[in-house]
Length: 191
Length: 137
Image 1 (cartoon, helix red, strand yellow):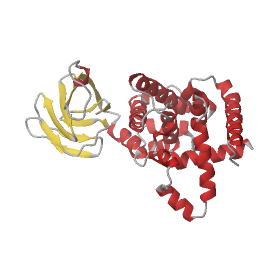
Image 2 (image 1 turned 90 degrees about the vertical axis):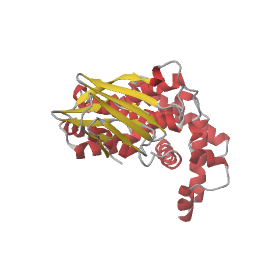
Image 3 (image 1 turned 90 degrees about the horizontal axis):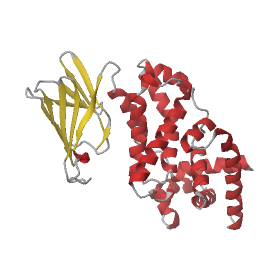
Image 4 (image 1 turned 135 degrees about the vertical axis):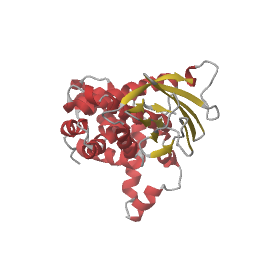
C-alpha cells in the first residue's frame, strides 16, 4: 500500500480542510499505533498514547515548521509519550493484545475463523509462529520490526524518530534483526 | 527472502495487533473539536495532582480549565460529567466534538455516557469560542 503525501495533506489540514485531515489520519494512524505498541505498554496505555499524540498534533497545527516531516513529528511525539508512561507504569509484554494472548489456546479468534474459512489455516499458523518468534527477539529488534511492520510502511526518518536510533543505523539494524528472526525460525523448525 | 519475510510480518501485525476499530475516529474527532479560531483554555486545576487522591475509577476527577474571563469546572466519574461555567452564563457546550449539551442560565451542564478517555469541551459564549486543552479522564 502506497502512502498519501502527508506533507501536502498536512498543509491543507492547517487551513481547516477536514477531508485532508481525515486522509492524513488514515495515512499515519497505523504508524502512531505501531509505535505505541512497540513500547510494550498495556492496551489501555497504548490507546492513551495514541490519542495524546493526535491531540498534540492538533494543538500544534500552526507550529509544525516542516509539514513534510509531520510523520516524524508524530513518531517522535508518540515515542516521548510512551517513555513518559513507561516511567509511570510497569511495562508489559508486547503480546498482551487479546488476539495474541489467544495464540497459545486452541480456540480460534474471530479473524482466524474467517481466514480459516478461506482455507488458509496453514498460512495463519505460520504467521502466528512468526509473530511469537518476534516476541522472543531483543527489545530493540522487537521495536524496530514492529514499527517497520506498519502498513503503509514508514520512512526511515520516521522509524528513527519513533525509536531514537540514528537514521543511518535503521537499515543495518533491520537486516540484523531479520537475520536473527530467520535463525530463530529455523531453530524452531518453522518453514 | 527478506522481502517475503517482511511482508509476512506485516500481515501478522495486521492480524494479531490491528489498529483498534475506533482509532481513526478518535484522531478525526480531535480535529473537529479544535476550531482554528478558538481560544485554548489551559488546565489550571486537576484533582489528580492533589497528593491525597489516587487514580481510581470511583473517585470523581475534578478539573478546571481557564482563559482570562472564563473558567470551566468539570467533575467526571463513571461516565457522568458535571460542569459549571464561571462566571455563570448561558452557553453552548460540545463534548469531544460530537455530544452537544444544554447549559442552563447559571452555566451548569451535565452529560451521561461520556466514555473514559480523551476529553475536550468546546464552549461557545457570546463573542468567543473556547476549547479546553485535551486531557485523558
